[in-house]
Amino acid sequence: MLAQIIRMVEEAQGSKLPIQGLVDKITMWFVPAVMTLAALTFGVWFFFGPDPALTFGLVNAVAVLIIACPCAMGLATPTSIMVGTGRGAELGVLFRKGDALQGLQDARVVALDKTGTLTEGKPTLTDLVLADGYERADVLSRVAAVEAKSEHPIARAIVEAAVAEGLSLPVLSGFESVTGFGVTAEVGGVRVEIGADRYMASLGHGVQAFADTAKRLADEGKSPLYAAIGGRLAAIIAVADPIKETTPEAIRALHDLGLKVAMITGDNRRTAEAIARRLGIDEVVAEVLPDGKVAAIRRLKALGSVAFVGDGINDAPALAEADVGLAIGTGTDVAIEAADVVLMSGSLKGVPNAIALSRATMRNIRQNLFWAFAYNAALIPVAAGALWPVSGILLSPVFAAGAMALSSVFVLGNALRLRRFQAPMSEAARTAH
Image (cartoon, rainbow, N blue to C red; front, side, top):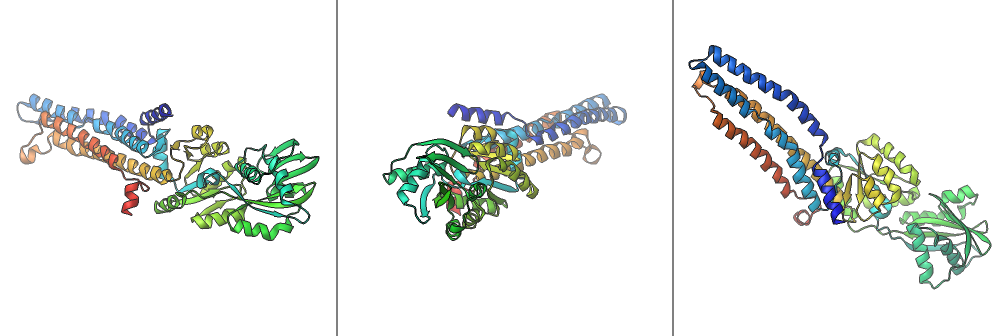
């Protein structure tokens, strides 16, 4: 893990941001322009200057070349990247790709996966409401037997509840998982089907009998599932996944940064909207199948540049589709490899920290570029001898070299200010707030 962290930081620090392409274009024209100005300076002094004209021409031409040396321009971007990504690593934010450092500043929407990102990813069984004629122990043992074959967190919650109640799980056969819908198997020669309301509808099982219960559970932010045994609806099951302690504070921090927050989830709309109301989330994209997250990201892009935060295997395509993908470091390796930024902590506090750091770093780069370009452009006329007719002052190449070095020192000093960057969700920032 340590070796991976070091590798990711080194790769990010050695990468070129898109803004560096602008610097390269400016430099491509700036250098020939300076060479031309130096030649013109020599020519003007040689033909129109006082004696010794050759000496004046050479000294002033050399001063122009020295003062205009674009060292500071070359340092402006990489020094800020080095310091910014290093500060990010201290905060637990690893930029796997350097261009993510620039891309995050443009984010207008932060889309969050629910399970494992907003929540702990450890659901617990909270409700089991039975239809007439069914017993809790029988239904729960059959349902748990089927769910024991599934790897979904909700399935584990149901199995753990059955084990906690001391129930033995019967033998099953013909297990089948329908991605995004539910699971089914034969338990004791009887077909057991478990899943969301859309799964029950596809099987022809009406869920109207549990409509009021489903509404109540969804309003409480719980995810309702249905179980059918022998072709008849037997129970409605509810699980709740606790919200991470840091989630509400992180969402407030994102709003303070002027960002819209969206939630993408496979939960039914009523449950999703109940959670969104509790957390202050702006946009809800509910009832999304695992392969529908990419389409959801594309729709959200209509609101602006999208940063997506996820942790699971099925989040990988959405992480790649988003303008910037942020993976929770406690998630799967697949998600981490597909992301541009890795948040080493398991909480969302790294998201506002990463965005604020991106904005601070890009602001720092623009300050460096402005200084480097404006400083050079302003002093070139002085080096060429523009003050000579007015005050008789010429800029010695020695002082030109010192001024050029001062420009580079300023750029380095400005970049090092990022080491004191205070993240919105750092301990110091929270204490001050």
